[in-house]
Amino acid sequence: MPFIDKVDDFVRKGIKIPETQIPSFDRSIDDTVKRAVEFASKVQNLDSPAAPDHLAVTDLSLYDQCPRLYYLLKVLNLPDVDFEKLNYASSDKGISAAETGEITHQILDRIDYNAPAKREVEYLIAPYKLGDNDSGKISGLLTNFLNSSFGEEIKNSSVVMREIPFTLFISDIPIHGRVDLLYRTANGAMRLIDFKTNNVKADEVEAKREEYRLQMELYGLALSRLDGMDICEGFAFFMKPCRAVKYDFTPIVLRKCSEKTDIIVESIKKGDFRPRNIELCKKCEYYNLYCHHFPGSEH
Ligand code: SF4
Image (tube, rainbow, N blue to C red; front, side):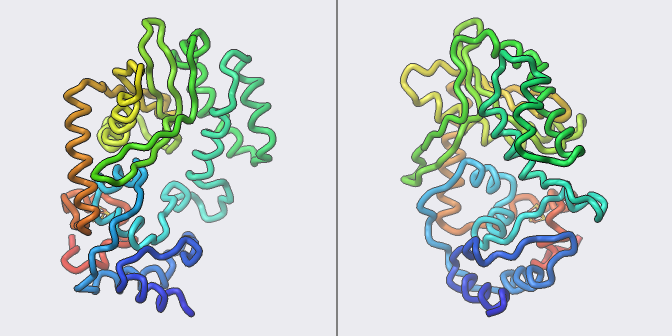
């Protein structure tokens, strides 16, 4: 059965299109996907999708960014787009942004901070058998962090924990997340680091700081609920351009984060996916791909 016919059925029922049914997204926008969005935009009586039985921290962050984007990617399960790769020359066969992130995180999960950085990075990248461009890109990201003040501090830390999974319950829905790195600083407090591997320009860092605020504060909230965890700050480390931004986890910040998350989860349960701020559409890359199909989206 063609994808478009299956999509009709899934959208009418208000349920996710299973991963196995989703076509991959290539450089030219797949006509079938366009038709699927056109179809979805015309469904007037889309029932509220069944409340999800679990959510990821990144799902909440996505909803916070734009409820409609959450709807497209998480309810309809339409393919996300690697904009970095989409903007490359068509001949580029390099790995995607998602693959770059995955490999970089896998290496950071195993890296020995006390070993010579260059040798350690070369040794851990080699098994992936990447091309020169990709290998150089990932090596650069890793080296940026290892040579930063954080890398130096971790070498001397008495406690270093990586890939720490957690579950928070918000409005009876389990929220799953994973903290990249946690270590004890010289003054005894625990510090959280989240690695960002996407290609961020220096002048975009402040905007990204706000985009990731909910995610970071949810990490702080989850860890603050663990017994004996003295955590008061976290950093998102943008491996390119090698900049860190700080988030304070004060009790007031965490209470507001918890309240905001309650509202988001309730909105998802109710099926409220209206865009919050159509001003954002003017510079949103998803507009030309998906959202211009929605009625009243002209700008
Ligand atoms: S174009 Fe607008 S509605 Fe669509 S995902 Fe972007 S911000 Fe949301």
